Length: 334
Image 1 (cartoon, rainbow, N blue to C red):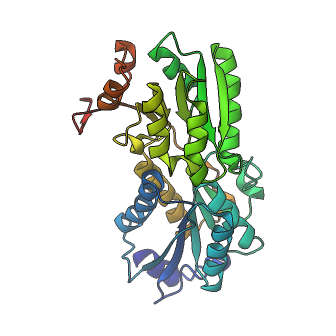
Image 2 (image 1 turned 30 degrees about the vertical axis):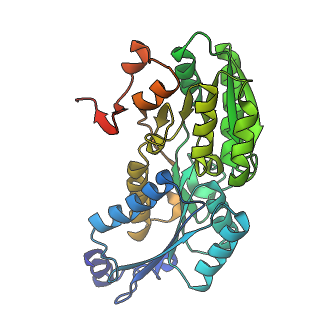
């Protein structure tokens, strides 16, 4: 690769990055996600495509070790330990639990840990400071902190009858706890109430969702990996209760959710890939501040809305960048 050759020609020796720039070797990158669902899959693909576009040819310049923890923290730790035993040059950890596992296993090493789709890396104990990276060791990455207050305001805009909003969440996910707490505070300011239901595993999501029906006027799910991986059961509960369901994951549109907000997770993957490239080019993680994604999207599903007898107000339609109707995604002209 050109960048590697250039470094060797000028004789620059980056001690912490020596494994990444060794001549004639393929960089080995371990990529692990906490569960399989469209948003995290899109992040993974975005990372790989970003590196491909930068000239890293899979099988020649880079080898990817792909893994999925299936929602289990113990499995995430085992995967991280396996990556360590295989002497990976860099780890991409997708979602908070996976990042925590990687950071724990690789603590005290020079192996860079680049996380993605982490809501609050400081609260998760991944970094000490999101703006000043000097004390963050071998960890950096990208955050998908969502505008929770805006989501709740959008739900409230659907109908004046929406007074109680149900949230299914996993208290074992640090990201979900942060977002649920933010939702409770925002709801109070907006004159609505959050009713919480706990699901500590994906198998418990249907029970938690069903427990809210008849008690709330709408459902809201944030970027909780446990719940999003079992999104069909929440959709079923919303349809049974004839109430709108907003999820902070645009990739879930088409699965029956009424509307979605949040980030384009493929773009999030590309953004994460750019951080990986900085490290491969010689920067240390503790020289790179946390990168935040800022552009959000509102997507409406007219088919799902029709199932529960909801007509979107024009004010909500005006906010939509995409609309799903008749099984087809329509994008607003730019």
